[in-house]
Image 1 (tube, rainbow, N blue to C red):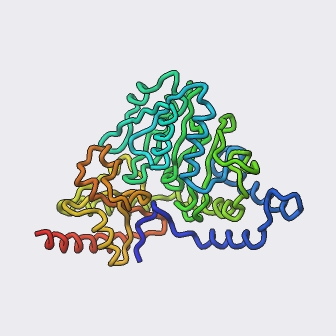
Image 2: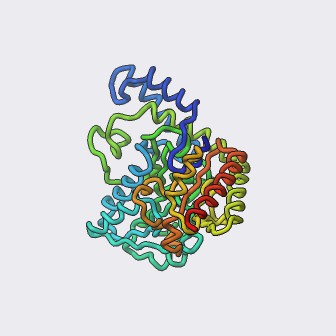
Image 3: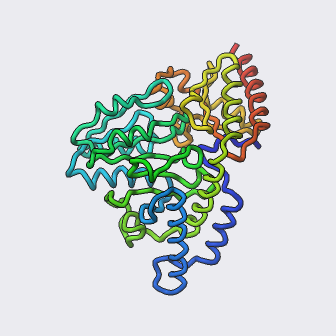
Length: 379
């Protein structure tokens, strides 16, 4: 099997699974319980929180465990909007955000907030001048995806932070689900107030994630109850998931120090696909993360390619896995100026550090065979 759908989800690392099983078996007491067994579980949870904070260069109290990227984005955006609505009702985001951001923005608009959606260029990157022009005294939040989940474009996070560094009442949220462990980011050294990532994107388990929240930022909680996670996310803590997440993050950040093999595979794929006739590559290497490639085959729908490759035991996706079953033209690609036909036919290859160049060569050979056979049918 060749698995090239890692932006949808990754295979849990064996060492991470071992950690999860060990903790779940030996530290199953509720961390909120008063007895000694519960206290030991609480100590382990706190140690994992501290470990994650240290790796990110932030404070322990700035780490909130969540169930993943979607929950983290909802808590960050709605939590901040409702907490600071007395200061302003204007939010800025982009046209190419994940549904867990885009749909939250639509809900906020229906509740009296005003949202500005920034355009992107043909490479999938926002214009900083448009951002600056959109800022008003009512702007309380900018929410921008760090790495796009469909084409891999990296946004100028450092420059965005610098733009609002002196704006006391404007906060900056980054959906970094696709960037963590792949694109280096010094959170503690940047003007980022909120940042989201999800464990299952870097070989941890599903149902685990983190929201980084600067200590001076206040959020209206989404889940009320027992007051866990400093009151921001009630519910019995997923101790084993949190410890396993810390283990997976350490391994991911170690891999991040050497992305040369990942980049070699990506560049090989980009070059070979671009050389094939009637192929359009939507990922621009100069502004892209090292693990995401998006392309279209002229005259063929994305799901046809996905299923044809599946028969060869090769797995990719049609752009975002979260919305692939809707079979709609990618809103990200349309925002980049791609035609409806190409956007509907787009597919995504997404890599992990476990992939090898030999797999990429097999993929290209099979893709060429499939396209040739499909073209014969069309003709």
